[in-house]
Length: 304
Image (cartoon, rainbow, N blue to C red):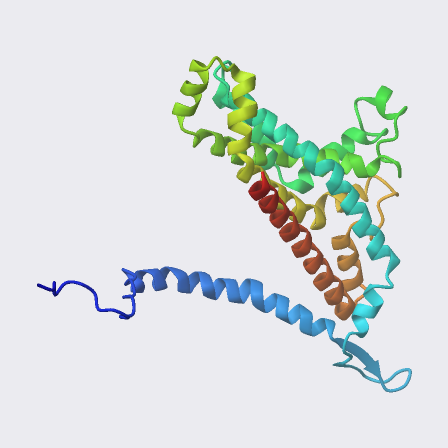
């Protein structure tokens, strides 16, 4: 006897119904609208502005914007100040980001250790600098580095923290001080999600705190470290407030010291079309570096 419940041969598989489609759409539509208005459209507008050039009829003729193709991008690739600032920020990121994330990981591991007392106090103490606006932090640290304003004159008069050789690392000190607590909280939150059974099994095998940190905690929080690294790469290329404030303390910080400062200075001339082209190139570079780093870490994890 043949069962009537058996599926017919060659019948197409049934599609699974997605429950609550209306609720999902209701939640996604506001996000989609805001994403389109404040992310996609500004990028498209900047790209369109970068394709325009200003033309005049004669010396004192009326200026008008006309389509110029990729003429502005040709100027971008000839702009030595912009590419010097890009190289400076890449050097900044290669040195500052690993140090900042290393400190954030160390502080997170210390807070997660059962040997540490007063976790709430230290968690708050590490995070407090992030609550300080970047401009205020730059003013405070700039005053501490200035030989005329610093209370540590014995040190600042012998070491020129605001000179051309050290001012970049003085800015890196400010950025590290502000953001290390923020990154620490992300990593610490990831540590709290690790099942306690893994630690109990490790203790039964005779593993100490150092061994558990190296073999259990760090591998399991690697996604959080990668995420903070991507955020830090993006933030490095967007650096503006701290070096802008340091211009008041050091003549070594010029108006084109970072890529964002170059864009700002170009737009202030005003040359908004060239500034738009610089912004597009900066955005593409940021995307390539952050996305490339993410894919590299994913491939490395798959091959491990």
